[in-house]
Amino acid sequence: SKHLRGDVNYAWPSAEVAVMGAKGAVEIIFRGKNVAEETLTYEHKFANPLAAAQRGFVDAVIEPRTTRTRLCEDLQLLRTKKVHTHWKKHDNIPL
Image (cartoon, rainbow, N blue to C red; front, side, top):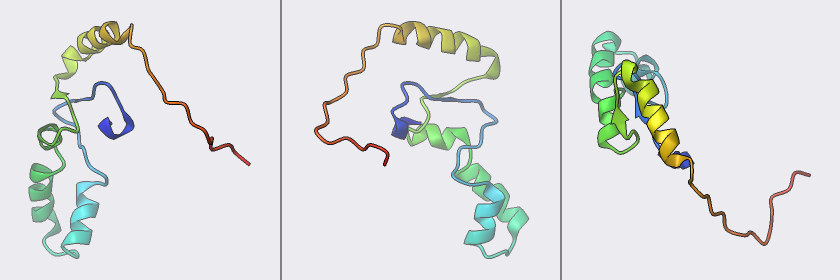
């Protein structure tokens, strides 16, 4: 995820990018009314990878057959990446 500082994020066309399943979300939002119909609408609007890509959560929606190639290219690109972490005066040690 971009929020967890992932360098690249891909999704397949069949991916469901959501916090919870569409059916569960629809049952909560619409309080059990027209669940089947509203689930289809919800999936189309929110729980698909194209919506996530438009919002910047996913870099690209790729076909499954291109996954290995894309990952190899990205790993080659990130091979020399240097991660700079800032020094922290106070650490969060387990007690």
